[in-house]
Length: 288
Image (tube, rainbow, N blue to C red; front, top):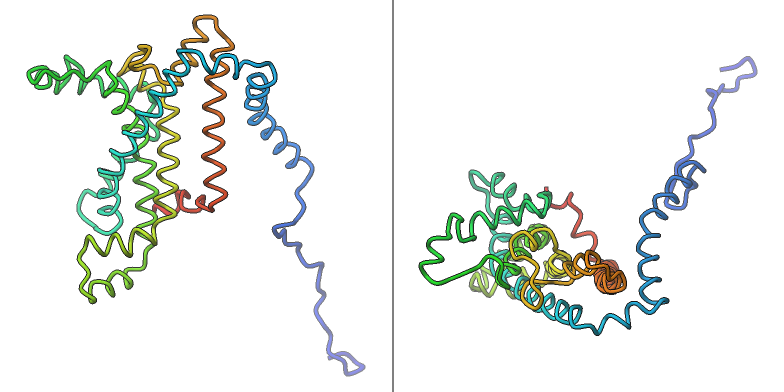
């Protein structure tokens, strides 16, 4: 209390500012962000501009090499995506709903192709499925050749892309309320019916996002394919290999045209992920 009988209040300094969603950022931060954005975007914009404005895309897109590679890429990625769902969905369900010894090791194995250099992945596949590989003698005895065939392209695409679907599907399935599944069991639903009617629809955004990202990764696969399947026109030469082959052969326009198709496909995938609000299910924090 002061002499005048009034309560003295402690001195209060200026309240610290809280940067909200619309808060300002400092000029240095904005400059650094702009530099990085330009660094990431300018090469892609330049490639697309060169392909469209200078006529490289319409002129070369109808060439035999590009058309053959596009057809092969679409066909092999479709098969790869089917195989990924066939074996990846049960694995994602097990990882999301079960706890068992060695689970961390299985999860590490599933995630490994994401960080493994593609060329290393291709070499590893060759050491297993090649003629002199671990399974080579058995495959040869059955008259089966895998290395440097279209089958090798599919296996390479599946190897590098499947983890994206498994991670996304696992996150989506783990997020489904188990009480809803238990209620369906009480009503007499079988496990298969429960998954199709309850779990899959609720995990739908995560499954869809995983499919889209998996397909995009398979479409852009290069290193594992060229190591394990080779670069044979009409049989193993996918679009990324056309980009490489045309550039090596001195046909810059052909390389640009094939690259532009891949860029458009990648942009389409990212736009779909954001337009349908699938991005949150791809957050790696949801995997933990």
